[in-house]
Length: 71
Image (cartoon, rainbow, N blue to C red; front, side, top):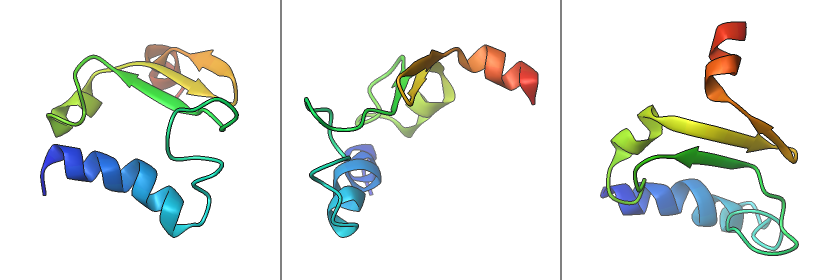
């Protein structure tokens, strides 16, 4: 599988399979927005997930280095 296919399966396709695509799976107004912000384009390389910049969870912006220190 290509990185783009993996990204699609992890987001939009899973939301469709769960019949939750009206609520999650893509970034759109009115949808729940838990986001993982990475430096590189995850549709081009799976290594993009190795460099997480920020995490937005339940409307809170979290710093991944702070989270790692809490483990």
